[in-house]
Image (cartoon, rainbow, N blue to C red; front, side, top):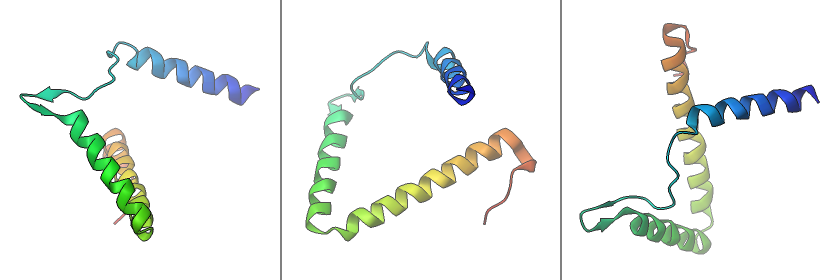
Length: 88
């Protein structure tokens, strides 16, 4: 019950911080280039190729995990500065 309360407080704080951002459902269009269409088509092609060649989805999952870890480490480095743990 205490954990639920802490999670609600954390989610409320995040909502207050990011609540002023506008909602959007489509990616922007630059000139005649509609990014939403291109990304949707690219993801569709990737899923199609992953159905044909299943190891591709495993490699993509590993890449997402690795890039997520590197992103989190960059955020930790920004927040903690020189006190951040160094993973080579």
